[in-house]
Length: 146
Image (tube, rainbow, N blue to C red):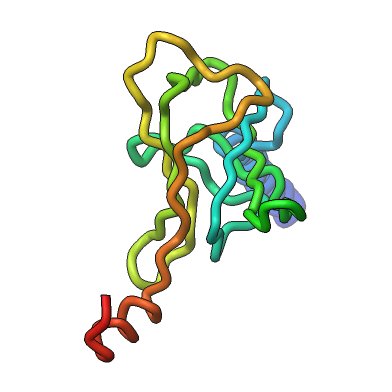
């Protein structure tokens, strides 16, 4: 009888811990259920960016990459950004592709502008800077070209 009680208590503790992990994951994960609005940004080079990637302002995650397509007319990468509601970006903001160090992943970094007007859903971020390849930079340094 004491064995069954101990097993029941251990099982209840395991269920409580699993429930705690689920609550934590639900609070910290972006399931797309919250309010979002989409912006577009076109880049000449979008290496390392994929669907689900981070979008950050001042290092803080404020959205995710919800799509990456190729514009057949300009041959630029069109990145669709799902921004969290409540994060309003000035219309003269700029976006660039950055990386988390030498071996880290890439993300879209947005630098807010100073305009008093804000980007609305579906609008384009006009000022963009594509990714910089570390191998290209090393090759240029070795070859001595600019």
